[in-house]
Structure formats: C-alpha cells, structure tokens
Length: 365
Image: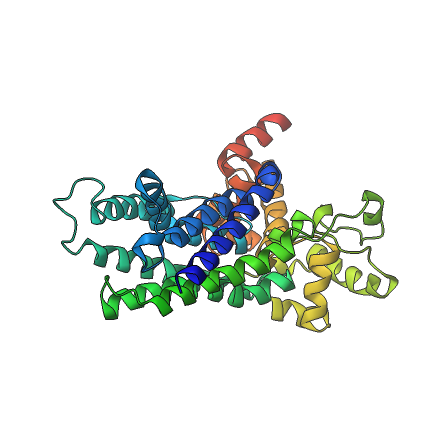
C-alpha cells in the first residue's frame, strides 16, 4: 500500500509540475498561465503531504514549503477558475481580502507563526472561507453561463470546475463532519488518484495541442479571411475566429448588422442571447456560433457593450449634448447602471467617461 501511495502521488505531482513548466513560457501571451502555475504548485504541495504514512512525507524545509503551497491550493484554485471562465477577470479587492484572511489563518493554524494559536479552532475559519469561495465561484459560473459564446467553455463550466472543486469540497466537508485529524488511507488515495486523472487529462490535451486550447481559444486565421464580414460589424479578434463566413451566413450577418446599426437593439439592457436569437430569426446555437466564430466575441455581454460604448462615445463627443448627464448617456446606450458603464468605459478607453468628453470636446473646439 505504501508503494502505491508513493507512485500515485509522485506521478500526479510530476504531471502538474510538467504542465506548469510547459505552459510557463507562454505566460506573456496568455495571462491564464499566470493563474495556472500557482495552482499547479499548490496541488503539487498538497500531493506531497496528502498521505497517512509518516515515512512517505517530505523532510524538513521541503515539508514546510509543500505545506505552505498545499495550504494555498484552495485560493489558487478559486483564482484560476475565475480567470478560466471570465475573460475580463482582474484581481480585485474581493480576491485580495480573501487572500489576506486566508494566509495568516493558515499559517497560524499550522503553527508556523508561533505555536500559541495552533489548535485553537482556526481551522474552522479556513473551512468557512473555503466554502465561501466555492459559493462565490458557483454563483459566478451560473450567472455568466448563459452569455458565454464559446461553446466548449460553456459546457466545460460545470464539469471542469466540478472535478476540481469536488476535491476541495470533499476535503472541507470531511473536516467539517469527521474532524481535521481524520485521514484514512483510502480517502487520501482517492483524492490523489483523482488529481492524477485530472492531470493526465489536461496533459494529453495541452501538451499535444496549441496552447490556445488552455483558454478555449480557436486557432487564428489570416487577416484576409475577415474581408467577407457584413458592413458595420465591430472590429474582429483574429485569434477567436474559426472560419471565414460561408455564403450561407451572409444573410444572418446582414440581419445582425441591421439589428445593431439601424434598430440598435443593444440599447435594451435586458436583452439576452435567447431574445437576440429570436430577433435574428435563427436558432440560438446558430446565433452563438455566428457571433463567436465569425465576429470574434467570446461573451454576449462584451458583444453588446462594444456597440453600447460606441453610442456612448458618440454622445460624449457631441457638442450639442455637452450638458447631458453621463448617467443619461449610459442609460440611453443600454447600460443598466452607472458603475457598469464606468467600468466598461475605463477598460475599453483607459480613462473615465468625463475625461473622454473633455478631451473630445476640446479637440473639436
């Protein structure tokens, strides 16, 4: 049993570290790698210490390093899943606060900041924080799933995260019900074998394919493939394109241009993918494919916001609308709230709407 335990843990840790090493050179062009590498290190640390056999544990300083990485795996998993399924994910105050709460609690609970506070129940704080991160992630996944236009990623939202979070939740619930010292051999082996299986699946996929597969990105097309698109369509993202639009899609592209450029249905803040497909007069899967593969948009919200921002910028640069409140401009463009408008505007233009208006009106004076 000891030999099987060591073989499974070494094989699984090697796979995760191999993946991190393989992907690290792509960190400059694929930001998701920056979130995957800490996760791989955290899981490798978890595997190093997830055994009931004392003789199979790492010695000395290596055990301490593995312990810190293992204790951080839950936070790293949360960050990675958020980045994987949200192209616009940025490390924000919520992630920072959770980390600032998690790491001191984890270090104190394990006695690495002094033994006085170890064993006084701080582990329950970690359990509550871990469950909170799981709930937050599930809510985000379900909330944004409907608008996800990348079909493989949309399907993968549930099973990929379920596979990884299942390990975390099982571990947290076992601690909650059975106590923190409960570590039977079979339970640890099942966790390690699950990580081995997930690592093997990811290695087969990522080590034999283009790294774009990591973020559910399609291979790029030559720029000349963009020419047949409908007039009035937004700027394309070549890396997101799968094929040049066939003749059969020409009518749908023209209908899309009419809806967005003439009828301006993007100004409806309640517009959904299903509602948009109805207005297009086409099945929803066909509309999803069209917007994703031919126009390059990966989320329906980003697609709509592109048009909304164009309308807002036109209004802000119009001298006849110089006295209009920015809130009115945002609502007229289709944004549901001023904070969402300000956030989207800053991300797209690198400045606040008020600053954009000042510069635009000043340049036209």
